[in-house]
Length: 116
Image 1 (tube, rainbow, N blue to C red):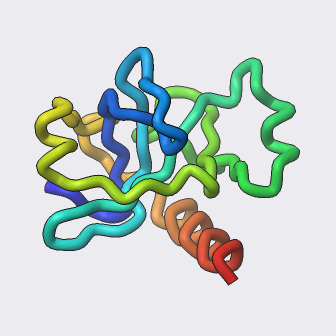
Image 2 (cartoon, rainbow, N blue to C red; image 1 turned 135 degrees about the horizontal axis):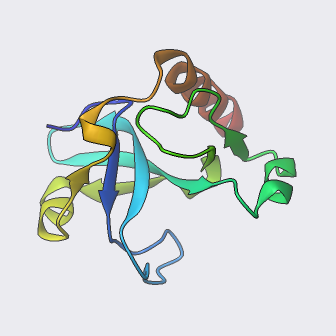
């Protein structure tokens, strides 16, 4: 069910522990037996200035699965239990289509470079 490059929609706490007001999109970047690592995705509209931050990366080919120009927040990575995702009502995003392979690889590469 969970695959790297897929986008899920779920209402879960943000990395800082604050509650999300509504379900949000997250990019799956790693899957293990019991957990997934995800990055928060946000629409660019009205937040263009946030693309100046080095940890915010624009998704070049956002559609599918996203319906509007968006970016990922590399510093928002969370490891989440799959059981928690299910209890929070996780749903596939964009008919379950994955993010463009080139975008996924670019994001994963940039994430590795930030960790160094």
